[in-house]
Image (cartoon, rainbow, N blue to C red; front, side, top):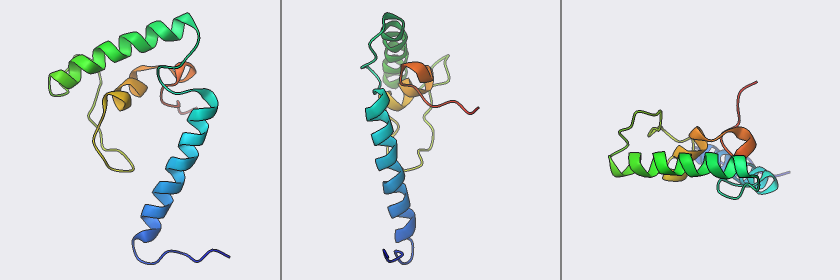
Amino acid sequence: MTPVPSGTDWQTETERAIMRLWNLGRDAIGAIGSAGDDGCAEEIRKAREICVEAFANGWRSDHNVGPYRKPGGGRWTIQDCMRGLTSERCGGNLLDK
């Protein structure tokens, strides 16, 4: 049996495990920018354009681009922004159902 990490280590270890699972899932369905169909390519292109412009303007935009607090910490990136503007089908954030 694996020992339970002490103190706040459990939170860090849990976040790492979740990120490993997330990355495995993203590898299985494809990451942003690698979608094969033309509809996704256009959707991803538009999201990238919006997010690059928002990043250049200090995340100010007419679109809901962030920055938001990330579960694992770290800086908000253009890829994070793109996931929020891209459909689940094309590699964006999973939708609550």
